[in-house]
Length: 184
Image (cartoon, rainbow, N blue to C red):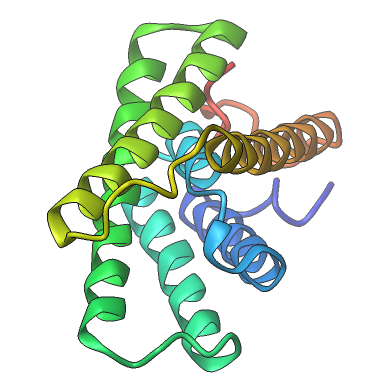
């Protein structure tokens, strides 16, 4: 038997959330401001019920902010704090979009559609934020959006591969109970 499979459901949620936070730290250090928000939001929607998904995604966001300010030199100013808060809201919206799709579309199509919904939500909300703050959207070029999409898609693919390996190894399963990885 493995350690995660033997945990109570609440402890499994905590363990999986901790793994997502660790991934957030690593990816923040690697990509700085290009954290794959849609990938994290979709995984949170896939792995957890609503309350745990919100807690998990806010933990991912907080880890990103801590690393950004402590290690990457994010500026200490009102604009940066406002964008940080905005990103928390954007992540919550993206989790909601992914969960909405997952509740209506099953299987692999649902997983892909949920990821696309989360990505479109993230990019749309960031664009709206840029317009509202007067930053403009000139930097939303096809090349930039494609790069962000590819980072998200590669990360999401990596998460799905890890999820499949974990399921194959019996992680997250418990006889007589619903699997924490309940979609797809």
